Length: 300
Image 1 (cartoon, helix red, strand yellow):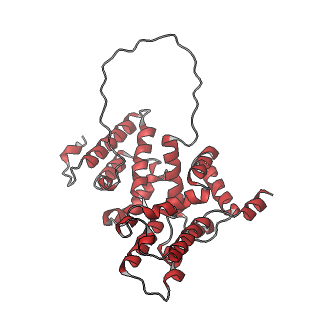
Image 2 (cartoon, rainbow, N blue to C red):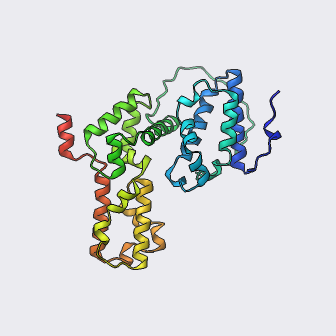
């Protein structure tokens, strides 16, 4: 007889940990009974693991220590021939980490008590929106895992190192995603449209190498003596770009930058300096987009 979850002493009794306990238990039961809900529950666990791989959580020691295991859970290979003891190990290793995942808001449960009345049965053709919902989340998860485990690939290096990407590079990555079943062509097109380009979507998943982000601003501050606030602003900017890969100019007027420059970078920089910062930010964005000449050559 296996012991109940409540028989094992766990340090974390947070609501997030308990919710993950319930999810893990449901996965185990579905696995044992070959229930049809197993695939959906497995995907939810993979989405949790993918969320733990977000660059913003890299500063948490416990997550860094289990990064390799989390990557395995987020992928598909780990789930082949998975056993209940493996699922229990998963629960115990991740339950204390899930509370670090940023909350996307809470929703109170809605309870209803009414009786359905069935009308005439008719056939309705359902239209599925490409890239929407859980399918898109799974696509992002698989692509993120691939990029992080294949940083030696030239195209991935270009995205990480702020080097100019080409249409050929993106085409090769797109084919890899399709060949490996990460998603559909509609998923890829949806991601590209939503982020302003496939390269920008991919950059947003893996961020920018810290050294590359710093180097982008070398010319701006070399040979100059900056004030404490100016240095702080640049540090925030480099950290933001390292985490997110790119930044929109409008974000310079929002938190966390408002803590240093309440009404914008003009508060602490000259107009010329602001123009130079904007130009650097736009150039970082441009390297993740193939130029028009390159696109025309690729389409020829």
